Image 1 (cartoon, helix red, strand yellow):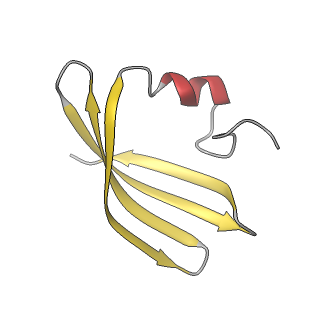
Image 2 (image 1 turned 30 degrees about the vertical axis):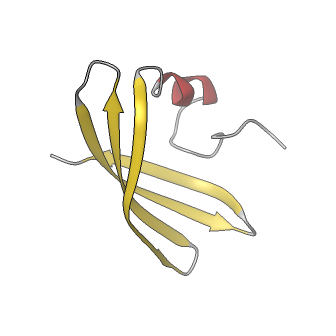
Image 3 (image 1 turned 180 degrees about the horizontal axis):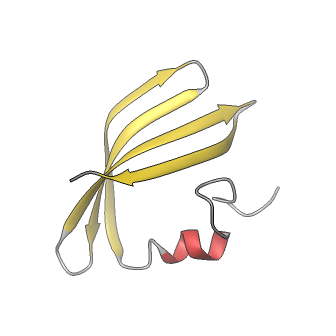
Length: 74
């Protein structure tokens, strides 16, 4: 099995992981599924006290996330 997060976004795994470097806590809300699609809202609280929300969509096939995107809200 490859590195976790390898199918999320369009960049490298290192770029994906770096995006969480200053994240203190993630909170998931509004979780829903339809077929192979999972949708949720992610609130990312940063180490400097600020927060940002994202609309997140994952595609799951045979128990594996095959694609995912996160779009900032606001």
